[in-house]
Length: 349
Ligand code: IPM
Ligand code: MN
Image (tube, rainbow, N blue to C red; front, side, top):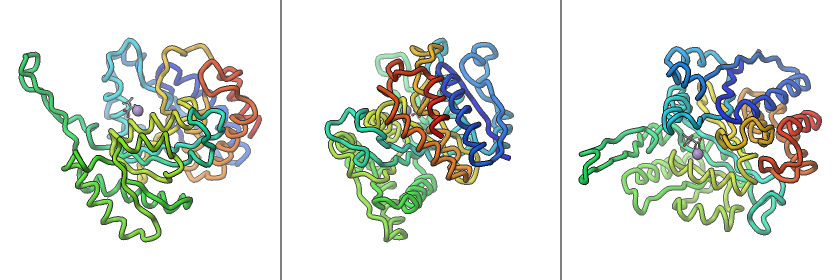
């Protein structure tokens, strides 16, 4: 019996999670596994009412679950930064979800903004370090508010943190078994402390994986190649900040935020799966948002639980719907409502 903690969250989060849960119910019947869900109301509305984002006792409660299914975090009436750090990053950090796994996979060439690129050309995975770097929140102001003000933001990288991420990426690349190529995406030519550590660690660990081809690309060049030659990539490993940036670009070349999913993974603990697009206030409550990213996140969640067949079936159902039904992956342009797209996935299952 899997125990799944569900955090629908803000904006369009509840609408897409509703469709994901519909698919979960259908796939559980087909693959005969049992689960129970509990809904948690963490998010902007609760914060506005109670002043609370996420407390230590909430974290302890969440540790009892098999996985977390998250909709979106971000509320127009809450100052930027509060929910991001107090809720989303707090979940990632305190559950030590040190990997952010973001597959970039094009399901239908018609939805790719790149000219002449086919599904086989856009099929790679970004392994983003998810617990350190610039996201650590280290730094300070000096002489705040004066003309001499200095703001310092530190990228914090530990050997252990870098090593566990790189090791995960090598293992993942081996298990994926496609091109068996791992690219380190960094900035060794300018950020000479952090990327020196990353590069040394990468090269050392590479010796343990003689079957994996390694490569290095600066982050700026990586963005260029995402557009020019996405077919060069298989698995990319990078730090938290670069991973954040390149996966938004990745989402666009796979067809947009409507389809982009990710997993915040603690290989030894509780992992959390989410559509990466955010709360989309503009589309909230209109039943027009694309639920496929959330449904793909559910597929990743199932694979993580060990329900590999069920996870793959969800992905295949999504591929069918994307190829046979939808006019576009963009909110409001799919040719169907949010609810109808969820129904189409269930039917295709
Ligand atoms: C993401 C988001 C978050 C991040 C924000 C909302 C804190 O952009 O999941 O990529 O920067 O990691
Ligand atoms: Mn982001």
